[in-house]
Length: 125
Image (cartoon, helix red, strand yellow):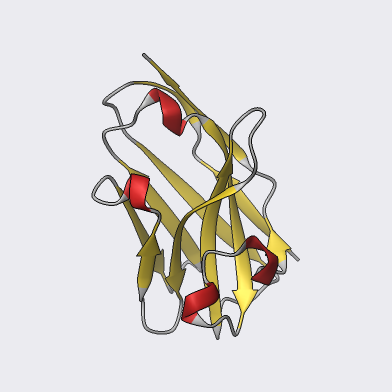
């Protein structure tokens, strides 16, 4: 039972990457899938989340308009398309699943019960 996040890498400022979060032995039904990130020396922070059932999304203010979260029901996978990347987007990105999460709590990392291992995104200036 696991989540696997992949797709990170090194990219120049202004570039783009697409992260994927695939579930194995774990269901996304009745769940929220979120992306969080942690930069060196900083706390883990919310990036974006999607409600699996109806596709409702939420974004952190500093990624709105640049990042897009989406899901593929058939592949049981969630994507994070990141555009116009900035050096301050550099971090390890984690995906997580939360069961029966109220929308107001969607950005809180303590409501997520399953986490992927993280994938490193490095944006050079």
